[in-house]
Length: 243
Ligand SMILES: C[S@@+](CC[C@H](N)C(=O)[O-])C[C@H]1O[C@@H](n2cnc3c(N)ncnc32)[C@H](O)[C@@H]1O
Image 1 (cartoon, protein in one colour):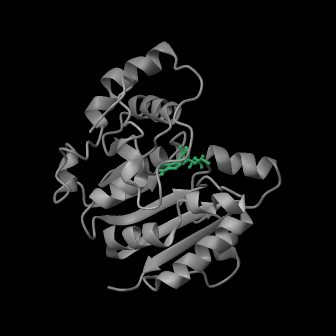
Image 2 (image 1 turned 90 degrees about the horizontal axis):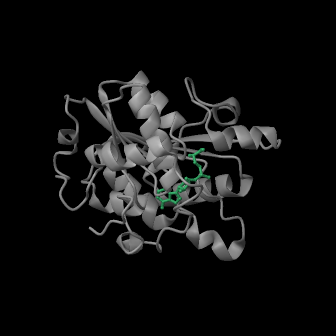
C-alpha cells in the first residue's frame, strides 16, 4: 500500500473502486501542532492496513476481545462514531474517512476519551468493503454521504448497485445498513437501489420511523448544518433478508 507523508492512503490506492475512485477532498485547512502529532504517532497505531490485516479475523485488530464489528463510512468529524464506540464498548468499530482533517479530529476525540474500540481506515470505503470477508459486520452506517446532486455526477454517489452488493456481502445475515441524508433525491435514489437489490428490507412501518432519528442517534456536523438550513433528514434502516 502506498501512503503519503501524512500516513493517508494515496489516491492510487483508492483507484480499485468498483464504481470509480474517491471523489472528495482529501485535505482542508492546516492541522494544528497537536493534531499533526496525533497523525504521526496515534494514527499508525490505530490504522487498518489492508495489505497486512487479517480479514478472516478482524476482531484481532482490537487489543481487547469484541463481540461484534461495525463500520461507519465517511465519518467526517467522528462525532457519531465516537459516541457509538463509547456507548458500545464490547463492539469493535472501523471508521473510514479519507479526509485528513476528519481523521485529525477523530484522533483528538479518541485520545480525549481514551477510546480503545475504534480502528481507522484513511481511504475509500469501497476498497475496505472489497477487503472484508463475508458476514464481517453487524451494522454499517452511511451518514450524510456526499450528495452529488448533479445528474452527471450521480455515478459518484457512494450508493450504487455494486456497493450495495458489497455491503450485503460483508454484513452479518442479520445485519443492518443505516443511511441518513437530508437530500431528498439521494434518499429516493437509495430506496430505489436498495429495493432493487432484493437483499434488504426497509424496516420503516410509520412515517416517524424515517422522519425522526433512531434512538440514541448522535447528530453530526452535516446533520446540524442541514437543520440550520431548513432541510429535514431521512433516517433509513435496512435489514438484510437473504439469510
Ligand atoms: C458530507 S460529509 C459527511 C460527514 C459526516 N458523516 C457527517 O455527517 O458530518 C461526507 C464524508 O464522506 C467522506 N467520503 C466520501 N467518499 C468516501 C468514500 N468513498 N469512502 C469513505 N468516505 C468517503 C468524505 O470525505 C466526507 O467526509
